Length: 296
Ligand code: MG
Figure 1 (cartoon, protein in one colour):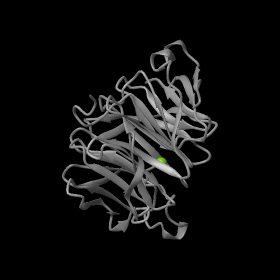
Figure 2: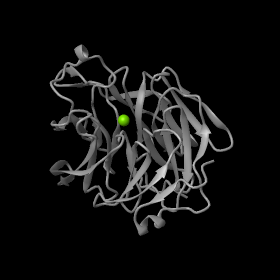
Figure 3: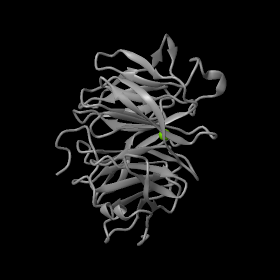
Figure 4: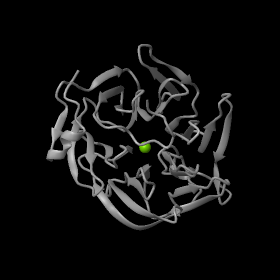
């Protein structure tokens, strides 16, 4: 266990630190991990090993087991307000919902009559609206039929709309806890930043601005705590940013992280997917969630 992973850069970083906590390796030996999400229904953390074409479930005291294989090269995962699992699938180029009986419903696989590129990550609003990114990481260049790499808004009535069209490789995506701000990262080499947008009338991202340039490394994925701090993957670990984009401090991780998610019964454990390993660290703050009453 890495006993001193916290690198404070501002005094109020102390608010997130749990002094007794270190970064724990929960399981290694994976190929490339992504898409962590805490699922009370499954009883633990669901996450994706993209090249292994498998999703896993980690449970306290029980370790890891296969959750779904083949996973159609699943990447990002999230819960909807009913606690159902939503998944971005690279291989089948679609976004799905896993129903409580285990059956799978396709939420989106085409736009304008053409296949999506390879949905990467997603976030859900309390009214059930799904926002997802569609970069080309899961396809060959000649397979791209859409004339862009869009950020999509999937309305509760099923209407799919390309709401942001000037990204090169839109990747991580999340909403502020009050759902007034949408954050989206662009992991294109020349950009590697997170942008923020005000949500006009709760549906239209406007006033886009660069929230934070990430480097070294990129912001593949990120989550927010219930106070609106943003926890993102970066080259040397997890960066913790305040709502103005200021860097409060870093959490060092033994491998380069891809993404993170709050979980545990009280929502104060940050799970980190990092290449071949799944890690966790206990914090003093609780994650934001669209599922009412998710944390004990
Ligand atoms: Mg990603």
